Image 1 (cartoon, helix red, strand yellow):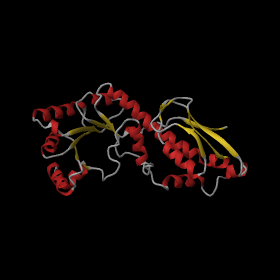
Image 2 (cartoon, one colour; image 1 turned 90 degrees about the vertical axis):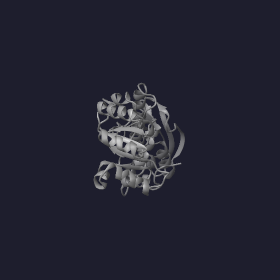
Image 3 (tube, rainbow, N blue to C red; image 1 turned 180 degrees about the vertical axis):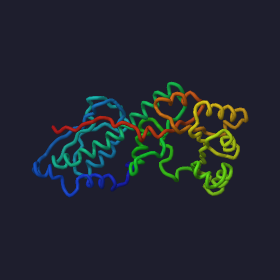
Image 4 (cartoon, rainbow, N blue to C red; image 1 turned 90 degrees about the horizontal axis):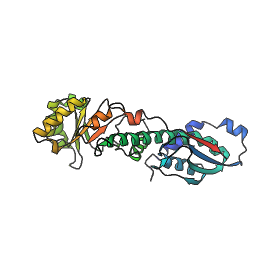
Length: 280
């Protein structure tokens, strides 16, 4: 089952083509048939194959064989083989590669991050944020899941997440939680972002399901955790830490007794996985 808009991917391809591919159309006969293969040039985790299959189907390109999303891939692996009109292969190759390389890069970074962190804390979840590319949110978050991470919220209707600007408008942590509990279905969890010990204690006391400790250093987080434990409030909530967390310092946060580490770097700073397309 695809998780993207039925038309968005195809619109992107035709936006890239414009009125026509003048290079291909000036050089290649319409009935010229070709075979193609996409080769991985690095090691990683594959993502975006469902998009590639969708493009192949749209342009009547016949898949011969392929790896699956989530597969571990290595330099030299032929991850996709297909055939069809040479013109259609040449018109679509860059878009297919762009999706595969970008999404596989995210899945690979998440996988490597999870392996690194789970050596220290095997129970902590690595989650992404909403720092995603507009129009690619679902695909990028799916790539996070393929890499072993947590998608957090796919959309704003997934759960309540009360942020600092919400609190600024409402007036207080307690009032924000009260309003959410009164106005949102019981089926939705309530998460709140706090930046200090006092607000973390209030959030736990007044019924937050998840507390995000935002932009706190490890020492500040440890103080919050110790205080919640002493007041017997720790077991009531999921603790998420976020803000300024990157590959250089993530181990410091993994060593803490937290449930979730969320960071934007796994979606907005992932390097594309190198791949290439060759005609046979």
